[in-house]
Image 1 (cartoon, rainbow, N blue to C red):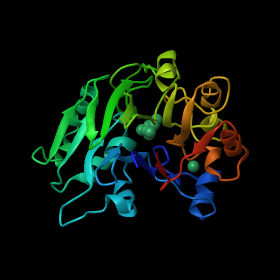
Image 2 (cartoon, rainbow, N blue to C red):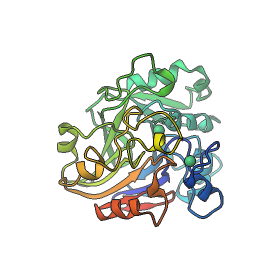
Image 3 (cartoon, rainbow, N blue to C red):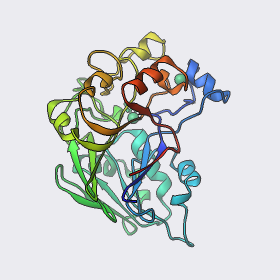
Length: 298
Ligand code: MLT
Ligand code: MN
Ligand code: ZN
């Protein structure tokens, strides 16, 4: 075995069900008719012993409790070596607060994302004596954990909601929203939970890769508006949708990727219903709809 990934949380911010939502999916999930999904996070390992977590969701306490490979192996010995965050969004950093208790691990992020975390003094709960905050430059490979070399790269996105000013650029290319490339034993794996657009640079980067976890936030760009759930389009939130001429199903149609898995699904997304026409359509296009607890070994 050279690579293992476990989907700790397949949903976008809010999760399924979301606490204040009465949409069809949330009602079905609350009544146990469709599986609930926790918030955006992925665990990866090359040896099953040393693990890294990509994004620390507010549900991390429950996700760690449920994932046997991440359980303590001694009084304070943990298989978790590092945490990497791909943006400063609440669904990706709030779980860091759960990881206090003087446990040592490395926290990887770009300088910009580290600044966002450092500017919020509540994160001082992660004692510097235990948690090593390492700044990673874009396009510079580094050791994520044993056997896994990672490289961060810019993907079109925006600043976190809580840092938005009056004018928001939703497809900014920089250090605020990144994708992760992981290389191990000749395999190339990508994790991109937020992406506003599949541009040519990203296309050529992903071509020929073995495994991809990709932004599956919405099925259609106007899904929240049409269902009376909000005012924002997917584009305004910095997420490309699955369907439509600019959607990911179309954009990836002629890309060669070994296995494509949607993650970071908003609770409104119809693909979260196991028998929906939209899920069947996504599968017909070669995608797997991610689920909490899903495990992939290469
Ligand atoms: C997003 O992915 O667009 C954000 O997580 C939204 C949010 O912070 O609620
Ligand atoms: Mn999110
Ligand atoms: Zn809902």
